[in-house]
Image (cartoon, rainbow, N blue to C red):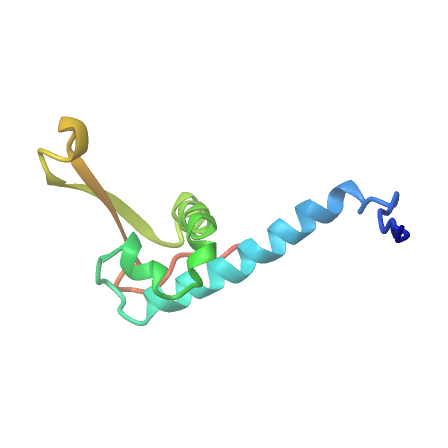
Length: 109
């Protein structure tokens, strides 16, 4: 009978570790999104177009970063109805984002 090695660890990361990791990732995604949008100031880009700037695993977090940039007034956003008949009879809406033509708003530190 072979022995079994137990590699469990009782040491957990500090609770603020997850918050720090999330904050660092959000700063990185905000920078990538702003850089991607700033390449074409005044041009409306869909969320799908902005997603091309990041890894596919970060797409959901990117939407959070875009939302926070819009809430702070750094970028603008709007929702447009693409079609009246989407899945299950609901309208298809798509979000669009842009850096104003005069440049991004004030970036908080």
